[in-house]
Image (cartoon, rainbow, N blue to C red; front, side, top):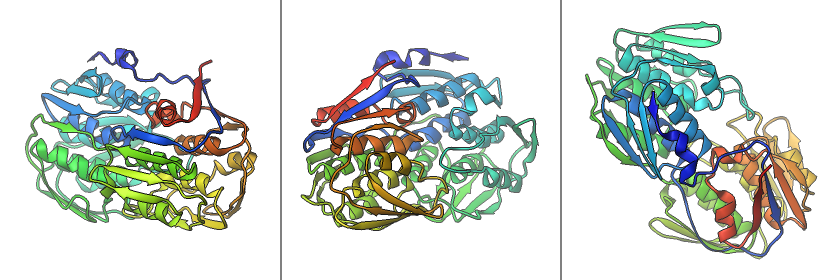
Length: 436
């Protein structure tokens, strides 16, 4: 293993301490410009795709996040040479001398399962620790394994590990029982080096799928239909190194837009991709925000009074589950009652109890329906983040809550937001990180 990512944090990227806290005080409306970082959810599979290639691949606009650090550490463990300079990452996977992704690395991030398909496709075998559970619900890897089996791989589950092997994967028609971003990414990568044609039906349509397909095609893959429910991949014998830019993070962009709306601010979110955010933008307008949409920016002017809106999360192009917690935070201050249906993950209302500690009025029916009655005031309080997007929702609530809000477990936040407190402070928020 050769890597210089040990210096990852020396280039300004924030190292997460489980004991750190974010302290937020009520302030006025946010104003100014904020620049969006590269997408975590796009960067992870794109970085993993380097395993398919002998030679150096270069990726720009890579965000400085703990999940990125974890996946680069895993690639280094497998034998790749990894270098990072600012937001540019170069990976040379010419020599892969290990095909095992150990528990100590995989447990930190479920996306590590994405190495399974590329390793089997290129090296003929892989051994990857089972990812385990997740705070926001069970996310099984059955679809990944069934797809690889359909392509001729032999799969075994022993001692907490998935072992897969194949002399060469074969093209197959794979129909997903449910839409899965991770399974679509994993099998699309595996199919690039398979013999024959692979068709993925009921495939995920997210912008991150298109971004991965674009990178794979730049490497020489033959892929059609990315961004539609049916993707066709014609396998090739080898791929070549390529360069690519990571697309903007649509969830980070949406989070700042909600911050602008709920504080009654006037914020321009720069370096974003509005066409990836149509469902989010529509709901912001319904809530009363005024939007000025540019080619790569959105100006958000918050309303005097937030209107109640109903939300149902759904796979892309529907309303993203990763924006549900942030909108719930905003709707706690709305005029009227909002109903939120969460259809993607069964435990994604864990943040409700913490919002209620701040004075929110939220009722839960079953596991998937939340009724939010808007209140005039929230009160600052010590709160505990349960997952990445819950962390963001608590910070957003702290921006408008009377007094001081202390958000604990900010290591969740550092998995998906690059210096969010610095960016919010640049917009006028009273927020700081307290290191322990």
